[in-house]
Image (cartoon, rainbow, N blue to C red; front, side):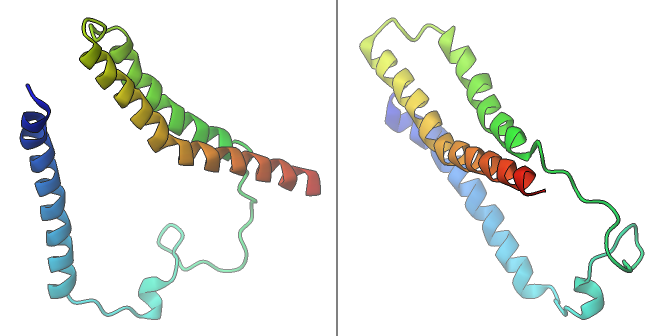
Length: 129
């Protein structure tokens, strides 16, 4: 299968599906009534209107580590089968494999950077308490 056939077979239907979903979303925003009022946009807790301040401080000590896990886990899950596949038979297949790996890393690098930044901020929060 050539690259053009792959784009025609997989890329165009995916883009068409996403465009149709986005178009339907915008269409529904236009035709459905939307009348926000203070009662609709206020926050609720278990169906009751909240009164006073919250009782507990939400601990965020593992937030950065959660972001790291959510970022690295898809990379590992998606690249592990590639590592065991038969990509090393030709140079073209090896080039495609390296392209896939580089794309995964490039796509996940901003999320990794943000997660590491959040971990450092959380350490500063703990130092202030």
